[in-house]
Length: 486
Image (cartoon, rainbow, N blue to C red; front, side):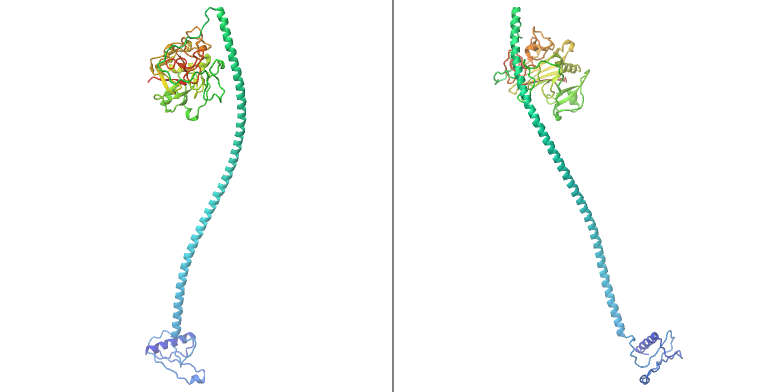
């Protein structure tokens, strides 16, 4: 059997199988006849076909059709081709849909990323908003603080104006008091003259003042200023202060006046035995320190000089501007007085306690009105106790100022109310200060601070060092300092 006939037979069989219209059952397993009953006269006239099929095992129904059929449900090659085209088209659409799905997946991922970025941006915007809010609050607080500061400035300005008014009132009162003091000075001078007249009427030889210094100094400051008897300081016109003259206030029992120096020159550590111990502890800056010598009852505030001759010097006396009155009584010189960062006297008892700790040396620093600095150094220094009148003991001299302390060595300390000198009168009265007077002596570093150098006075009562400038040349500044012997 030809392949075309076999294929046609199979198609017809499938068609009949689907419709359930097999014409008859096979009588012979080898031969099969397929007949269709005529439906009309026209169909009865059509030819019928008989197919001879080789003997074989039949596994399914075999149907045969008579004549040419025009059934609409017949499967043709065109139907198969159409089905294949449809399948291809659907396959292409599926591939297109797959691409679309992939693209949509990417879009979904991008949307997720955009949502995440959006959330991050929202968080950042919230953070910026909070920062802006805090900044606004801070600005408002600053404005409030500024308003408060302005109010405080206005209050301080009002206070300063009130203080200025009070200061002007005080200046007027000081001028009035100065006039009274001048009048009292005239009266005191007249009374002194009267006393001298009365005394001369009772005695043949009235007491005279101490002998003037006759030493011709080796070094005389050149370009000496004109004679003056004014007692000045840098702040004479601004501050009312005590003056070390006969018209000044009488000696009082005030104790050491401590004036706080600037913070950079102050150390709250300690107390130390002396300034050398403070230097050994790492304090290499000159300034105010707290010391407590052995056997001392209370600590002392002193100025430590750490910039001269390797430092470690304890300042026991300082004169620089005449701001402190040195014409005082015994108790004042014993306990000390003045301003630590200005003019002051450490105190005889404190100096005595310092000297008892060991072997000390003394350095006297002098500055004239030409700003030339000279010095006198003694290789040993100490004081004897109060029972001995704080007697002065100094060693061998060296320096370029001259040895004007030799005549005072071994002498007791003299004040206006305790006369320990070798003169018939009181040297403290004539020299206007306290010192280790002899009769009366070649040095008077606690005398009256005169401006200009050479001064004019009835007695030699300036701050003089006889071997440098003579008895009528008052130094611009002077310092006495001690340090343990190396």
